[in-house]
Structure formats: structure tokens, C-alpha cells
Image 1 (tube, helix red, strand yellow):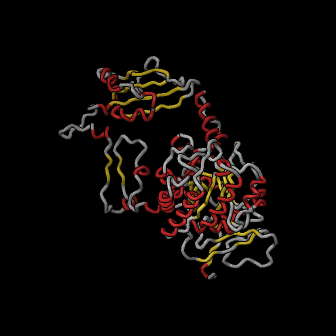
Image 2 (tube, one colour):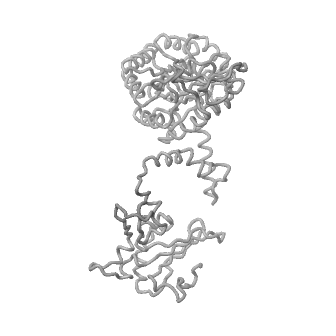
Image 3 (spheres, one colour):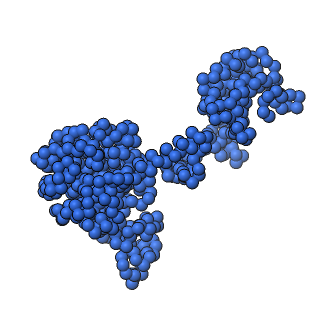
Length: 514
């Protein structure tokens, strides 16, 4: 390592290490660092003062390991560093870009994609072979582009024979996956914890793994191949152990037997090919495999552990609860969902705004920042030099909005009451509790946009109502009704200045809530 070009972990990365529940016995690869830096906890107090390039003083049970500058590690290389680091490593299963972001924000080092959850979220269908290779690659690319941590993709059974497996592996490499999970089920395949599992022959199962290894070599990639067998439920424990050994001999990087039925079976599996890492699947909510803690899994000999349904399961429950509340006329309680500001932070709005400032022009601010909130009048936008009293080098910009434009005749003379834009609609919504929810005024020419403000007006021919009121002097109530939620919706047309009383206010109309 070249000390002059060393890097250290940031404060946020350090805090994620210190707060990790298994931090006393594990190291943590930092995927954002070049050459794969690690932060390693230690069980003794440091005796030397940290070097000058260290950005903070580590707590007593931690030391900071710097990483030298160079090419950024590939996702596959980062995943291999995780496999080589001590301890068991948890990987929740995501199903889209947002769920992957949440996994990364929670401090996990990597994640899986779940074919079960992607089939549910993308298609609304069970994991029984409906989802295709193309759909999984497309979904996977959205996931890998949303995060910086390595992602292990669910490649199902490779979507066909050995040649299809090669295409699948190459597609997953291009999509940015760090690893691919391949199984030995027949087509159509299904969740390994459901009934009727069937597997291909030993020979075909081994050829799938060999084809995957060949595809990796041909692509010049280092993608991690996770070989899964479903033969425990389809055939026997002995068969699943035999296939696991064969997969290791064929070049698999990680071994996985799905739906093992006891802790003893899990121990027997971890004794197979001891130099090859093992993966456990903790199917939440009632699978065939017993649910063990990460420390218990580490003691047995597992390296990776997947949680396939946690995010999908709680999402389903939360959406059902929210829909029940909405149907009852309520919104979900504040404690059941993040605030709007929190949602924007999670999705990256604040980061976007900060980055957007880098590309702002020097002479003019954005339209929304310089134009008055009253969008229906002429606004003069001047540059900075004019505000300083200097002669402006650029012309003054005049924003002409629709109501202004319609107030000019063809010969250029003004007509203050020409066209539909000279009329104003007042839209008011009063809740069934008597509290005012909305009170806006828009030009009548904005008819197409009114339903964006009040969806309940969709399908109402307001133009016909306006035509009927064309000869009215003053104002007229066009609509007054209650929507399905019990809110009172009123629409009043105001005919230019003629619609105001002698004090300059709006006309007093019977039945209209002031």
C-alpha cells in the first residue's frame, strides 16, 4: 500500500460499522472504496495514536484499515471480499430499485434479488415459472443501478438448457450483478418451499454449472456463481449432498441446498466441500427450514444468509392496512409511514437539488424562482447587471401567459373582456367537517387542467356550463355537489370585473359558502 495515496472510511461508513449487531467479530468491505477497503473491529484497545491521514479516532474495539488508490472494485470483486471476510453475512432480498436502496441505507453489505418477490411485484403472479429471463434482467438492471452494494441475482434454472444458462449468465453480467444463483429445477420452476418440486438429472444439473463457469470465462468476468439444488425435497438429503459436491467440483463459488428440514441436515450440508462457502435461506413466515440466528448459522458453518420475504411480506401488510384506512375515510396514521420530507430524502430529491446547482446558469435563475406566483400576468425578468443599476447586456424577457395573449385583438388593440380567458373560475372544496380544504381561482381557459386540481370534476362538461352562463352579468354558481367522500365541491364563474360588487369584492350568491 502506498501511504501517500491512502483512503479512510467516512464518518457515516464508520457509524454503520459501529452500530452493526455483529461488529465485534466481523470486518466490513466498503464497496465505494477503490481496491476494496475494510473496516475491521478488534478486541483490544489500540496502543498507538492514529496516523495523520485518519479522519477520526476509532473507538476502542475498532481499527481503521485504509485502502490504496487505484481502479474501483467491480461488484463481483467486492462480493468475493465479503466471502473471504470472517463471520456470516446477511443479505435481505429486494425486488425493485427502491427496496434495494432501503437495504443499502440500512447498512447491509450486499443483497439478493428474489424471483418470488419480483414475480409478485412486477407481474402480480405466483413464482411458478411465469416470469421470463428478459423481465428478470430488466428488473435486475434497475436494481443494480440504484445501489452501490453488490447484488446476487436470482437466475432461476437458467431458463432452459446449458446454452440458455450461458446466455443468462452473460445477461446478468451485463446487467451489473455481482453474483448469480442457478438451480437444478425443471421448467416451469417454482419456489423451493412449495409442493411438487422436480429436478433435472445429475448430468444436466452439473452441465448447467459448467456452462455458467464457461460463460463467465468467455465474458472476462468474475461473477460469483451460487449453485443451488432443490433435490432435498424432490429426492432426498443424500442426493442433495451428492449434487452439492459435484457443483463444487464443476467450479461453483457458493453452495446452497434449499428447503433443508432440520438443524442436523444443515450441519451435514456445511461439512460438504468445506473450502466452498455455504448459503442459508431463512424463509420467513413458515418455510421448511428452521429459522436460526446469524450467530447460530455462523457456528454451523454458513457464510451467506438470505431473507427472501421480509421486505415483500411487510410491504403487503402495510399496503393492506393503508387501503383499509383509506376505504374508511382516513389516511394512514403518521407513525405508519415516513413523512413526505423523509420520503424525498430516501428517493434522493435533496441530493438531486444539490447536484442541480452545479449546472445552474449565471445570468438567469430558473423560471419557477423568478416568476411571480401569479402565473396569469406579465412578468419582467431582469438579469443581475440590471439589478445593480448597470446597462443590461441581454434583453429583458417578457413572459406572456394565456390570459394576457387573449386580451389583444388581431389589430393589436386591447379588449379586456375578449375570449374565455377573461373569465375566472373559483373552485372551493369544504370538508364534511366544515373545514375548508381548497379555494382557488383559475382562468376559465384552464379547463383541461381543472381535473388535475379536483379529480371529482372529471367528466363534467364545464365548457357547456360556461356557455349557458355567457349572458350572465356578474357571477353564477355552476356546480354545487358532494363527492363520494362527503366533501362539498362548488364552482363559481366570475365574468371579468363585472362580477365584482361596488366594493371590489366578488358577487354575493345565494348558497355559495363565502
